[in-house]
Image 1 (cartoon, rainbow, N blue to C red):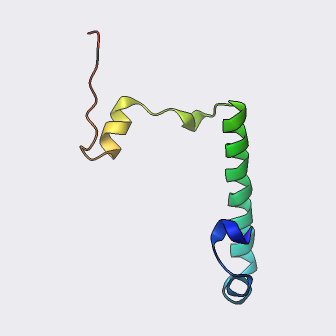
Image 2: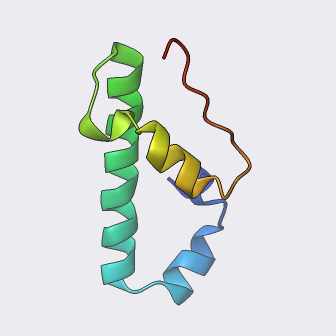
Length: 69
């Protein structure tokens, strides 16, 4: 776990609340599950993004071109 956060144990013990530690562990478990699902080929709703959404979040760095119209 500590390697995941790139922090020494004394920093976590001294600076993190129990609530923060629990939240970080919960998010780590969720991320690891997404990694496992990805390896197994399981798709979730957040796996796809519409071309319009991609273009809007790219702030113009990605150009979306439709082919075959």
